[in-house]
Length: 129
Image 1 (spheres, rainbow, N blue to C red):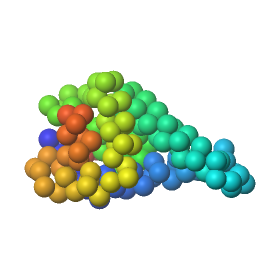
Image 2 (cartoon, helix red, strand yellow; image 1 turned 60 degrees about the vertical axis):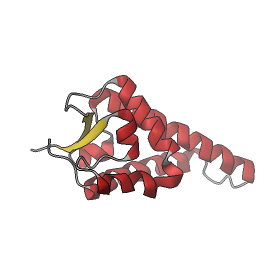
Image 3 (cartoon, rainbow, N blue to C red; image 1 turned 90 degrees about the vertical axis):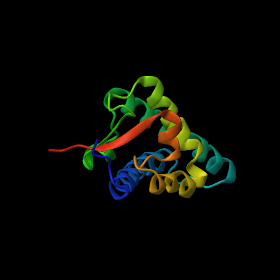
């Protein structure tokens, strides 16, 4: 398999983050009290999990991954199952606060697998044109 480089993966995450931030900005525009901010973080986490879970379950790609021509597949190269898609999305959200550890794992294994990839038994591959 042609594993995706970390630059492409980070770019896809950045694009998806910009999209989710835009959605949350519209929903929470002008609201600045502490409870609203806590609700925004909770709602944002749920939105990100649902977005990523649905997109990966449907086609193995989020919009950011589509733009950078990468796809999430099972470790054997087959299409990702719904269960793996949702597990990966939840693990990525859980590991969000320690993203540097999650991504750090990818630098030390031949499959460039992050911790959330290892837990979900998935890989991220580059799509050739």
